[in-house]
Image 1 (cartoon, rainbow over the protein chains, first blue to last red):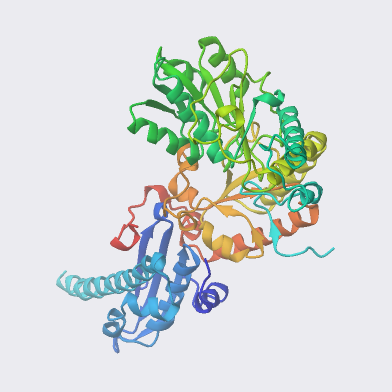
Image 2 (image 1 turned 180 degrees about the horizontal axis):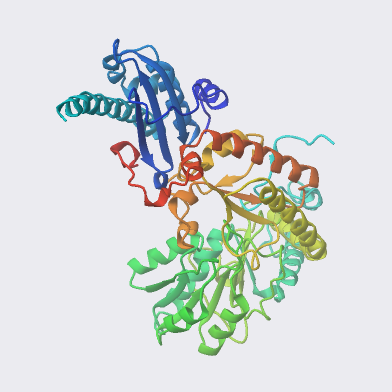
Length: 139
Length: 411
Protein backbone atom coordinates (compact mmCIF):
# COMPACT_ATOMS: atom_id res chain seq x y z
CA UNK A 1 0.00 0.00 0.00
CA UNK A 2 1.32 3.42 -0.87
CA UNK A 3 1.32 6.01 1.87
CA UNK A 4 0.60 9.68 1.21
CA UNK A 5 3.56 12.05 1.44
CA UNK A 6 2.07 13.63 4.56
CA UNK A 7 1.76 10.29 6.34
CA UNK A 8 5.35 9.47 5.45
CA UNK A 9 6.48 12.90 6.66
CA UNK A 10 4.75 12.53 10.03
CA UNK A 11 6.06 8.97 10.34
CA UNK A 12 9.64 10.03 9.62
CA UNK A 13 9.45 13.29 11.57
CA UNK A 14 6.76 12.85 14.18
CA UNK A 15 5.84 16.14 15.86
CA UNK A 16 5.63 16.49 19.64
CA UNK A 17 6.65 13.01 20.68
CA UNK A 18 6.92 12.54 24.41
CA UNK A 19 5.08 12.66 27.69
CA UNK A 20 3.87 15.35 30.07
CA UNK A 21 3.55 14.93 33.83
CA UNK A 22 0.26 13.10 34.16
CA UNK A 23 -0.10 14.26 37.78
CA UNK A 24 -0.02 17.95 36.83
CA UNK A 25 -3.57 19.28 37.41
CA UNK A 26 -3.35 21.22 34.15
CA UNK A 27 -2.42 18.16 32.09
CA UNK A 28 -5.10 15.97 30.56
CA UNK A 29 -4.18 12.47 29.42
CA UNK A 30 -6.08 10.39 26.90
CA UNK A 31 -5.17 6.75 26.33
CA UNK A 32 -7.30 5.08 23.69
CA UNK A 33 -7.26 1.90 21.64
CA UNK A 34 -6.05 -1.52 22.72
CA UNK A 35 -2.88 -3.54 22.09
CA UNK A 36 -4.98 -6.46 20.79
CA UNK A 37 -6.36 -4.20 18.09
CA UNK A 38 -2.92 -3.05 17.05
CA UNK A 39 -3.44 0.61 17.95
CA UNK A 40 -2.85 2.48 21.20
CA UNK A 41 -2.62 6.26 21.32
CA UNK A 42 -1.60 8.37 24.27
CA UNK A 43 -2.30 12.05 23.85
CA UNK A 44 -1.50 14.61 26.54
CA UNK A 45 -2.32 18.30 26.63
CA UNK A 46 -1.39 21.06 29.02
CA UNK A 47 -4.13 23.65 29.27
CA UNK A 48 -3.83 27.15 30.68
CA UNK A 49 -6.73 27.27 33.18
CA UNK A 50 -7.18 31.04 32.79
CA UNK A 51 -7.32 31.24 29.01
CA UNK A 52 -8.42 27.62 28.31
CA UNK A 53 -5.73 27.56 25.63
CA UNK A 54 -3.82 24.33 24.98
CA UNK A 55 -0.21 25.34 25.45
CA UNK A 56 1.50 22.00 25.02
CA UNK A 57 0.61 18.68 23.43
CA UNK A 58 2.56 15.43 23.37
CA UNK A 59 1.82 11.98 22.01
CA UNK A 60 3.05 8.42 21.90
CA UNK A 61 1.47 5.88 19.60
CA UNK A 62 1.69 2.14 19.08
CA UNK A 63 0.20 1.49 15.66
CA UNK A 64 0.67 1.63 11.95
CA UNK A 65 2.15 4.61 10.11
CA UNK A 66 -1.29 6.15 9.64
CA UNK A 67 -2.01 5.93 13.35
CA UNK A 68 1.31 7.59 14.15
CA UNK A 69 0.64 10.31 11.58
CA UNK A 70 -2.93 10.91 12.82
CA UNK A 71 -1.81 11.44 16.40
CA UNK A 72 1.21 13.51 15.38
CA UNK A 73 -1.08 15.74 13.33
CA UNK A 74 -3.54 15.96 16.21
CA UNK A 75 -0.85 17.38 18.52
CA UNK A 76 0.01 19.99 15.90
CA UNK A 77 -3.60 21.00 15.47
CA UNK A 78 -4.60 21.28 19.13
CA UNK A 79 -1.65 23.43 20.12
CA UNK A 80 -2.75 27.03 20.48
CA UNK A 81 -6.43 26.13 20.25
CA UNK A 82 -8.87 26.57 23.11
CA UNK A 83 -10.40 23.47 24.67
CA UNK A 84 -13.69 24.14 22.88
CA UNK A 85 -11.94 24.54 19.53
CA UNK A 86 -9.95 21.34 20.03
CA UNK A 87 -13.09 19.39 20.91
CA UNK A 88 -14.57 20.49 17.59
CA UNK A 89 -11.84 18.73 15.56
CA UNK A 90 -13.44 15.99 13.46
CA UNK A 91 -11.77 12.81 12.31
CA UNK A 92 -12.84 13.58 8.75
CA UNK A 93 -10.54 16.60 8.76
CA UNK A 94 -7.63 14.32 9.67
CA UNK A 95 -8.62 11.88 6.91
CA UNK A 96 -8.63 14.75 4.42
CA UNK A 97 -5.36 16.28 5.55
CA UNK A 98 -3.48 12.95 5.49
CA UNK A 99 -5.35 11.46 2.49
CA UNK A 100 -6.06 8.31 4.51
CA UNK A 101 -7.54 5.37 2.56
CA UNK A 102 -10.80 3.80 3.82
CA UNK A 103 -9.02 0.99 5.71
CA UNK A 104 -7.15 3.60 7.75
CA UNK A 105 -10.12 5.77 8.74
CA UNK A 106 -10.18 4.11 12.15
CA UNK A 107 -6.78 5.71 12.84
CA UNK A 108 -8.33 9.16 12.48
CA UNK A 109 -11.30 8.18 14.64
CA UNK A 110 -8.87 7.03 17.30
CA UNK A 111 -7.04 10.37 17.15
CA UNK A 112 -10.31 12.25 17.61
CA UNK A 113 -11.16 9.95 20.53
CA UNK A 114 -7.73 10.63 22.03
CA UNK A 115 -8.27 14.41 21.91
CA UNK A 116 -11.66 14.05 23.59
CA UNK A 117 -10.34 11.60 26.19
CA UNK A 118 -7.44 13.88 27.09
CA UNK A 119 -9.65 16.95 27.45
CA UNK A 120 -12.26 15.04 29.47
CA UNK A 121 -9.49 13.96 31.79
CA UNK A 122 -8.38 17.58 32.11
CA UNK A 123 -11.97 18.73 32.80
CA UNK A 124 -12.35 16.07 35.51
CA UNK A 125 -9.13 17.18 37.13
CA UNK A 126 -10.27 20.81 37.04
CA UNK A 127 -13.61 19.90 38.63
CA UNK A 128 -12.02 17.89 41.43
CA UNK A 129 -9.42 20.61 41.98
CA UNK A 130 -12.26 23.09 42.37
CA UNK A 131 -13.97 20.83 44.94
CA UNK A 132 -10.91 19.90 46.97
CA UNK A 133 -9.89 23.38 48.24
CA UNK A 134 -13.50 23.88 49.30
CA UNK A 135 -13.46 20.58 51.18
CA UNK A 136 -10.16 21.50 52.76
CA UNK A 137 -11.54 24.89 53.87
CA UNK A 138 -14.44 23.16 55.66
CA UNK A 139 -12.15 21.12 57.89
CA UNK B 1 30.64 -3.45 0.76
CA UNK B 2 27.51 -1.57 -0.19
CA UNK B 3 24.42 -3.73 -0.51
CA UNK B 4 22.07 -3.46 -3.44
CA UNK B 5 18.66 -2.15 -2.45
CA UNK B 6 15.89 -3.11 -2.08
CA UNK B 7 16.72 -6.37 -0.31
CA UNK B 8 14.46 -9.37 -0.77
CA UNK B 9 14.03 -11.37 2.43
CA UNK B 10 10.62 -12.89 1.83
CA UNK B 11 11.57 -16.24 0.30
CA UNK B 12 8.56 -17.99 1.85
CA UNK B 13 6.30 -15.91 -0.36
CA UNK B 14 8.14 -16.71 -3.55
CA UNK B 15 11.65 -17.10 -4.90
CA UNK B 16 13.32 -15.66 -7.98
CA UNK B 17 13.89 -18.05 -10.86
CA UNK B 18 17.46 -19.31 -10.67
CA UNK B 19 19.40 -18.14 -13.77
CA UNK B 20 20.28 -21.77 -14.54
CA UNK B 21 16.59 -22.63 -14.43
CA UNK B 22 15.76 -19.77 -16.77
CA UNK B 23 18.43 -20.94 -19.16
CA UNK B 24 16.96 -24.43 -19.23
CA UNK B 25 13.50 -23.02 -19.94
CA UNK B 26 14.34 -20.62 -22.78
CA UNK B 27 14.39 -23.17 -25.65
CA UNK B 28 10.89 -24.29 -24.65
CA UNK B 29 9.09 -21.04 -25.43
CA UNK B 30 9.44 -20.47 -29.16
CA UNK B 31 11.72 -23.23 -30.40
CA UNK B 32 10.52 -26.41 -28.74
CA UNK B 33 6.94 -25.33 -28.40
CA UNK B 34 5.27 -28.67 -29.05
CA UNK B 35 2.32 -30.07 -27.13
CA UNK B 36 3.52 -32.96 -24.98
CA UNK B 37 0.30 -34.78 -25.83
CA UNK B 38 0.99 -34.71 -29.59
CA UNK B 39 1.93 -38.35 -30.06
CA UNK B 40 2.64 -38.44 -33.77
CA UNK B 41 5.27 -35.86 -34.61
CA UNK B 42 8.68 -34.69 -33.49
CA UNK B 43 7.42 -31.45 -31.93
CA UNK B 44 5.30 -33.45 -29.52
CA UNK B 45 8.02 -36.00 -28.86
CA UNK B 46 10.54 -33.29 -27.96
CA UNK B 47 8.08 -31.74 -25.53
CA UNK B 48 7.16 -35.11 -24.07
CA UNK B 49 10.80 -35.99 -23.56
CA UNK B 50 11.41 -32.71 -21.75
CA UNK B 51 8.39 -33.31 -19.52
CA UNK B 52 9.46 -36.86 -18.69
CA UNK B 53 12.96 -35.66 -17.89
CA UNK B 54 11.52 -33.07 -15.50
CA UNK B 55 9.20 -35.63 -13.96
CA UNK B 56 12.23 -37.76 -13.14
CA UNK B 57 14.12 -34.80 -11.66
CA UNK B 58 11.19 -33.92 -9.40
CA UNK B 59 10.57 -37.54 -8.39
CA UNK B 60 14.23 -37.98 -7.54
CA UNK B 61 14.21 -35.00 -5.15
CA UNK B 62 11.48 -36.58 -3.00
CA UNK B 63 12.33 -40.26 -3.39
CA UNK B 64 9.38 -41.05 -5.66
CA UNK B 65 9.15 -42.79 -9.00
CA UNK B 66 8.47 -40.52 -12.01
CA UNK B 67 5.08 -42.08 -12.73
CA UNK B 68 3.88 -40.88 -9.34
CA UNK B 69 4.29 -37.20 -10.22
CA UNK B 70 1.18 -35.39 -11.50
CA UNK B 71 1.68 -31.88 -12.84
CA UNK B 72 -0.66 -29.10 -11.73
CA UNK B 73 -0.80 -25.32 -11.86
CA UNK B 74 0.69 -24.99 -8.39
CA UNK B 75 0.39 -26.21 -4.84
CA UNK B 76 -3.03 -24.69 -4.26
CA UNK B 77 -4.36 -26.93 -7.00
CA UNK B 78 -2.32 -29.87 -5.70
CA UNK B 79 -3.82 -29.47 -2.24
CA UNK B 80 -7.31 -29.21 -3.68
CA UNK B 81 -6.81 -32.25 -5.88
CA UNK B 82 -5.34 -34.38 -3.09
CA UNK B 83 -8.01 -33.63 -0.52
CA UNK B 84 -11.08 -33.38 -2.72
CA UNK B 85 -9.85 -36.24 -4.87
CA UNK B 86 -9.52 -38.61 -1.91
CA UNK B 87 -12.74 -37.42 -0.29
CA UNK B 88 -14.72 -38.19 -3.42
CA UNK B 89 -12.95 -41.39 -4.43
CA UNK B 90 -13.16 -42.97 -0.98
CA UNK B 91 -16.46 -41.63 0.28
CA UNK B 92 -17.83 -45.18 0.56
CA UNK B 93 -15.01 -45.95 2.95
CA UNK B 94 -15.42 -42.92 5.17
CA UNK B 95 -15.96 -39.20 5.33
CA UNK B 96 -13.60 -38.06 8.08
CA UNK B 97 -10.51 -35.94 7.45
CA UNK B 98 -7.93 -34.85 10.01
CA UNK B 99 -5.90 -31.70 9.51
CA UNK B 100 -4.54 -28.99 11.80
CA UNK B 101 -5.11 -25.33 12.47
CA UNK B 102 -1.95 -23.74 11.07
CA UNK B 103 -2.31 -25.27 7.59
CA UNK B 104 -2.28 -23.01 4.56
CA UNK B 105 -5.68 -21.69 3.48
CA UNK B 106 -5.50 -23.93 0.41
CA UNK B 107 -5.92 -26.86 2.79
CA UNK B 108 -8.18 -25.24 5.39
CA UNK B 109 -10.61 -23.75 2.91
CA UNK B 110 -10.71 -26.97 0.90
CA UNK B 111 -11.63 -28.81 4.10
CA UNK B 112 -14.27 -26.21 4.93
CA UNK B 113 -15.87 -26.70 1.53
CA UNK B 114 -15.90 -30.46 2.05
CA UNK B 115 -17.58 -29.98 5.42
CA UNK B 116 -20.44 -28.26 3.60
CA UNK B 117 -20.60 -31.28 1.32
CA UNK B 118 -21.03 -33.67 4.24
CA UNK B 119 -17.48 -34.50 5.28
CA UNK B 120 -16.38 -34.30 8.86
CA UNK B 121 -13.11 -32.55 9.54
CA UNK B 122 -11.04 -32.50 12.72
CA UNK B 123 -8.74 -29.49 13.03
CA UNK B 124 -6.03 -30.51 15.48
CA UNK B 125 -4.67 -27.74 17.69
CA UNK B 126 -0.93 -27.07 17.88
CA UNK B 127 1.24 -26.80 20.95
CA UNK B 128 3.04 -23.61 21.86
CA UNK B 129 5.95 -24.60 19.64
CA UNK B 130 3.67 -24.90 16.61
CA UNK B 131 3.67 -28.71 16.36
CA UNK B 132 0.71 -31.02 16.67
CA UNK B 133 0.56 -33.58 19.45
CA UNK B 134 0.74 -37.18 18.24
CA UNK B 135 -1.59 -38.22 21.05
CA UNK B 136 -4.15 -35.73 19.80
CA UNK B 137 -3.78 -37.23 16.36
CA UNK B 138 -4.24 -40.81 17.59
CA UNK B 139 -7.31 -39.80 19.56
CA UNK B 140 -8.84 -38.04 16.56
CA UNK B 141 -8.73 -41.11 14.33
CA UNK B 142 -12.06 -42.88 13.84
CA UNK B 143 -13.08 -45.84 11.67
CA UNK B 144 -14.41 -43.25 9.22
CA UNK B 145 -11.06 -41.43 8.85
CA UNK B 146 -9.84 -41.58 5.25
CA UNK B 147 -7.21 -38.83 5.16
CA UNK B 148 -4.71 -37.03 7.35
CA UNK B 149 -3.44 -33.78 5.85
CA UNK B 150 -0.56 -32.11 7.68
CA UNK B 151 1.96 -29.66 6.23
CA UNK B 152 5.66 -30.46 6.31
CA UNK B 153 6.69 -26.97 7.38
CA UNK B 154 4.68 -23.86 8.07
CA UNK B 155 4.90 -20.87 5.76
CA UNK B 156 4.83 -18.24 8.51
CA UNK B 157 6.86 -19.70 11.34
CA UNK B 158 8.84 -22.36 9.46
CA UNK B 159 7.99 -24.97 12.09
CA UNK B 160 8.48 -28.54 10.86
CA UNK B 161 5.82 -31.05 11.90
CA UNK B 162 6.72 -34.56 13.12
CA UNK B 163 6.08 -35.97 9.66
CA UNK B 164 7.84 -39.34 10.08
CA UNK B 165 5.82 -40.11 13.20
CA UNK B 166 2.56 -38.98 11.63
CA UNK B 167 3.34 -41.08 8.56
CA UNK B 168 3.85 -44.14 10.75
CA UNK B 169 0.55 -43.65 12.52
CA UNK B 170 -1.28 -43.14 9.22
CA UNK B 171 0.26 -46.29 7.74
CA UNK B 172 -0.55 -48.36 10.82
CA UNK B 173 -4.17 -47.30 10.65
CA UNK B 174 -4.44 -47.60 6.87
CA UNK B 175 -5.26 -43.93 6.42
CA UNK B 176 -3.91 -41.90 3.51
CA UNK B 177 -1.40 -39.22 4.45
CA UNK B 178 -1.28 -35.99 2.45
CA UNK B 179 1.49 -33.49 3.08
CA UNK B 180 1.62 -29.91 1.87
CA UNK B 181 5.34 -29.84 1.19
CA UNK B 182 5.52 -26.39 -0.37
CA UNK B 183 7.90 -24.80 2.12
CA UNK B 184 10.00 -27.89 2.80
CA UNK B 185 10.68 -29.61 -0.51
CA UNK B 186 14.05 -28.53 -1.90
CA UNK B 187 15.02 -26.94 1.43
CA UNK B 188 15.21 -29.90 3.80
CA UNK B 189 15.27 -33.63 3.00
CA UNK B 190 11.79 -34.89 2.14
CA UNK B 191 11.44 -38.57 1.25
CA UNK B 192 8.05 -40.06 0.54
CA UNK B 193 9.28 -43.55 1.45
CA UNK B 194 10.97 -42.74 4.75
CA UNK B 195 8.20 -40.35 5.70
CA UNK B 196 5.36 -42.68 4.64
CA UNK B 197 3.77 -39.93 2.59
CA UNK B 198 0.98 -40.94 0.18
CA UNK B 199 0.29 -37.54 -1.37
CA UNK B 200 2.70 -34.60 -1.48
CA UNK B 201 2.03 -31.09 -2.82
CA UNK B 202 4.97 -29.23 -4.35
CA UNK B 203 5.26 -25.79 -5.90
CA UNK B 204 7.95 -24.72 -8.39
CA UNK B 205 8.12 -21.04 -7.52
CA UNK B 206 9.05 -21.73 -3.89
CA UNK B 207 12.19 -23.56 -4.98
CA UNK B 208 13.63 -21.16 -7.58
CA UNK B 209 11.43 -22.36 -10.41
CA UNK B 210 8.73 -20.45 -12.28
CA UNK B 211 5.25 -19.54 -11.02
CA UNK B 212 2.19 -21.33 -12.33
CA UNK B 213 3.46 -24.89 -12.09
CA UNK B 214 3.35 -27.42 -9.31
CA UNK B 215 3.02 -31.13 -8.72
CA UNK B 216 1.19 -33.67 -6.67
CA UNK B 217 2.98 -36.87 -5.78
CA UNK B 218 0.43 -39.69 -5.77
CA UNK B 219 1.59 -43.02 -4.38
CA UNK B 220 1.19 -45.97 -6.76
CA UNK B 221 1.94 -48.91 -4.48
CA UNK B 222 1.84 -49.80 -0.76
CA UNK B 223 -0.84 -48.49 -0.93
CA UNK B 224 -2.05 -47.34 -4.32
CA UNK B 225 -3.89 -44.03 -4.04
CA UNK B 226 -6.65 -43.23 -6.49
CA UNK B 227 -8.06 -39.76 -6.95
CA UNK B 228 -11.26 -38.43 -8.43
CA UNK B 229 -10.25 -35.70 -10.85
CA UNK B 230 -11.50 -32.20 -10.24
CA UNK B 231 -10.73 -30.95 -13.75
CA UNK B 232 -12.32 -32.89 -16.58
CA UNK B 233 -10.97 -32.93 -20.11
CA UNK B 234 -8.46 -34.77 -22.23
CA UNK B 235 -7.39 -37.22 -19.55
CA UNK B 236 -3.82 -36.01 -19.19
CA UNK B 237 -1.69 -37.04 -16.23
CA UNK B 238 -3.19 -40.53 -15.87
CA UNK B 239 -6.63 -38.99 -15.94
CA UNK B 240 -6.07 -37.17 -12.68
CA UNK B 241 -5.45 -33.74 -14.13
CA UNK B 242 -6.61 -32.81 -17.59
CA UNK B 243 -5.17 -29.83 -19.42
CA UNK B 244 -2.27 -29.27 -21.79
CA UNK B 245 0.97 -29.40 -19.88
CA UNK B 246 2.89 -26.20 -19.23
CA UNK B 247 6.02 -27.65 -20.82
CA UNK B 248 8.23 -24.60 -20.34
CA UNK B 249 7.25 -24.27 -16.70
CA UNK B 250 7.69 -27.99 -16.13
CA UNK B 251 11.20 -27.92 -17.63
CA UNK B 252 12.07 -25.09 -15.22
CA UNK B 253 10.46 -26.94 -12.32
CA UNK B 254 12.53 -30.04 -13.08
CA UNK B 255 15.78 -28.11 -13.37
CA UNK B 256 15.01 -26.27 -10.13
CA UNK B 257 14.49 -29.58 -8.32
CA UNK B 258 17.74 -30.95 -9.71
CA UNK B 259 19.63 -27.92 -8.42
CA UNK B 260 17.99 -28.18 -5.01
CA UNK B 261 18.95 -31.82 -4.76
CA UNK B 262 22.57 -31.02 -5.59
CA UNK B 263 22.89 -27.95 -3.38
CA UNK B 264 20.48 -28.51 -0.51
CA UNK B 265 23.00 -29.70 2.07
CA UNK B 266 25.43 -26.81 1.58
CA UNK B 267 22.70 -24.23 1.03
CA UNK B 268 20.70 -25.09 4.13
CA UNK B 269 23.85 -25.01 6.24
CA UNK B 270 24.81 -21.59 4.87
CA UNK B 271 21.32 -20.22 5.43
CA UNK B 272 21.11 -21.63 8.94
CA UNK B 273 24.31 -19.79 9.79
CA UNK B 274 23.02 -16.53 8.30
CA UNK B 275 19.62 -16.93 9.96
CA UNK B 276 21.29 -17.49 13.33
CA UNK B 277 23.50 -14.47 12.74
CA UNK B 278 20.38 -12.37 12.15
CA UNK B 279 18.73 -13.76 15.26
CA UNK B 280 21.82 -13.25 17.44
CA UNK B 281 22.10 -9.68 16.20
CA UNK B 282 18.53 -8.96 17.31
CA UNK B 283 18.93 -10.64 20.68
CA UNK B 284 22.22 -8.89 21.30
CA UNK B 285 20.76 -5.44 20.82
CA UNK B 286 17.06 -5.56 21.65
CA UNK B 287 15.09 -6.55 24.74
CA UNK B 288 11.54 -7.89 24.79
CA UNK B 289 11.64 -9.79 21.53
CA UNK B 290 10.16 -13.25 21.15
CA UNK B 291 10.63 -16.04 18.64
CA UNK B 292 7.37 -17.51 17.42
CA UNK B 293 7.40 -21.29 17.20
CA UNK B 294 10.00 -23.97 17.84
CA UNK B 295 13.58 -23.03 17.09
CA UNK B 296 14.63 -26.69 17.15
CA UNK B 297 12.08 -27.95 14.62
CA UNK B 298 12.30 -25.15 12.10
CA UNK B 299 13.34 -24.55 8.52
CA UNK B 300 16.92 -23.30 8.47
CA UNK B 301 16.04 -20.16 6.51
CA UNK B 302 13.09 -18.96 8.59
CA UNK B 303 12.91 -16.51 11.46
CA UNK B 304 9.66 -15.18 12.89
CA UNK B 305 10.03 -12.70 15.71
CA UNK B 306 7.67 -10.46 17.66
CA UNK B 307 9.22 -7.10 18.49
CA UNK B 308 7.00 -6.26 21.46
CA UNK B 309 5.46 -2.77 21.61
CA UNK B 310 6.20 -2.02 17.95
CA UNK B 311 3.31 -2.57 15.52
CA UNK B 312 4.39 -4.62 12.50
CA UNK B 313 3.18 -2.38 9.71
CA UNK B 314 4.90 0.65 11.19
CA UNK B 315 8.09 -1.39 11.44
CA UNK B 316 7.81 -2.42 7.79
CA UNK B 317 7.34 1.23 6.88
CA UNK B 318 10.58 2.07 8.64
CA UNK B 319 12.53 -0.58 6.74
CA UNK B 320 10.99 0.16 3.37
CA UNK B 321 14.03 -0.95 1.40
CA UNK B 322 13.73 -4.46 2.86
CA UNK B 323 11.06 -6.92 1.73
CA UNK B 324 9.77 -8.97 4.66
CA UNK B 325 6.25 -9.65 5.89
CA UNK B 326 4.32 -9.15 9.08
CA UNK B 327 1.62 -10.98 11.01
CA UNK B 328 0.05 -7.67 11.88
CA UNK B 329 -3.60 -7.22 11.07
CA UNK B 330 -2.89 -4.03 9.21
CA UNK B 331 -0.85 -5.88 6.61
CA UNK B 332 -3.47 -8.54 5.95
CA UNK B 333 -6.48 -8.30 3.72
CA UNK B 334 -8.77 -9.46 6.50
CA UNK B 335 -7.59 -6.97 9.15
CA UNK B 336 -7.13 -9.93 11.47
CA UNK B 337 -3.73 -10.73 12.92
CA UNK B 338 -2.09 -13.99 11.86
CA UNK B 339 -4.24 -17.07 12.59
CA UNK B 340 -1.05 -19.12 12.76
CA UNK B 341 0.38 -17.09 15.64
CA UNK B 342 -3.01 -17.10 17.33
CA UNK B 343 -3.05 -20.91 17.15
CA UNK B 344 0.31 -20.99 18.96
CA UNK B 345 -1.24 -19.00 21.78
CA UNK B 346 0.66 -15.84 20.87
CA UNK B 347 -1.45 -12.96 22.19
CA UNK B 348 -2.99 -10.67 19.61
CA UNK B 349 -0.92 -7.80 20.97
CA UNK B 350 2.28 -9.70 20.15
CA UNK B 351 0.92 -11.02 16.86
CA UNK B 352 0.62 -7.43 15.70
CA UNK B 353 4.34 -6.98 16.27
CA UNK B 354 5.60 -10.05 14.40
CA UNK B 355 7.89 -10.03 11.40
CA UNK B 356 8.75 -12.99 9.18
CA UNK B 357 12.23 -13.12 7.69
CA UNK B 358 12.70 -15.62 4.87
CA UNK B 359 16.26 -16.09 3.70
CA UNK B 360 17.18 -17.78 0.46
CA UNK B 361 19.68 -18.79 -2.15
CA UNK B 362 20.71 -15.26 -3.04
CA UNK B 363 20.81 -13.82 0.49
CA UNK B 364 24.27 -12.55 1.46
CA UNK B 365 25.86 -11.89 4.81
CA UNK B 366 26.05 -8.18 3.95
CA UNK B 367 22.30 -8.18 3.39
CA UNK B 368 21.67 -9.94 6.69
CA UNK B 369 23.78 -7.39 8.55
CA UNK B 370 22.12 -4.48 6.78
CA UNK B 371 18.64 -5.83 7.59
CA UNK B 372 19.60 -6.41 11.23
CA UNK B 373 20.86 -2.82 11.57
CA UNK B 374 17.81 -1.32 9.91
CA UNK B 375 15.38 -3.35 11.99
CA UNK B 376 17.17 -2.63 15.25
CA UNK B 377 17.37 1.10 14.59
CA UNK B 378 13.70 1.24 13.58
CA UNK B 379 12.54 -0.79 16.58
CA UNK B 380 14.48 1.49 18.93
CA UNK B 381 13.01 4.60 17.27
CA UNK B 382 9.44 3.26 17.31
CA UNK B 383 9.71 2.15 20.91
CA UNK B 384 10.51 5.74 21.83
CA UNK B 385 7.19 6.49 20.21
CA UNK B 386 5.36 3.61 21.85
CA UNK B 387 3.17 4.31 24.88
CA UNK B 388 3.18 0.58 25.60
CA UNK B 389 6.96 0.40 25.82
CA UNK B 390 6.93 3.39 28.17
CA UNK B 391 4.31 1.75 30.37
CA UNK B 392 6.17 -1.56 30.40
CA UNK B 393 9.34 0.23 31.46
CA UNK B 394 7.35 1.92 34.26
CA UNK B 395 6.31 -1.52 35.45
CA UNK B 396 2.68 -1.35 34.31
CA UNK B 397 1.27 -4.77 33.43
CA UNK B 398 -0.30 -4.00 30.08
CA UNK B 399 -2.17 -7.28 29.92
CA UNK B 400 -4.04 -6.41 33.13
CA UNK B 401 -5.06 -2.94 32.03
CA UNK B 402 -8.61 -2.05 31.23
CA UNK B 403 -8.43 -0.85 27.63
CA UNK B 404 -11.03 1.57 26.42
CA UNK B 405 -11.93 -0.33 23.30
CA UNK B 406 -13.61 2.58 21.60
CA UNK B 407 -15.76 2.17 18.54
CA UNK B 408 -12.76 3.30 16.56
CA UNK B 409 -10.55 0.41 17.48
CA UNK B 410 -13.13 -2.29 16.86
CA UNK B 411 -12.35 -2.91 13.28
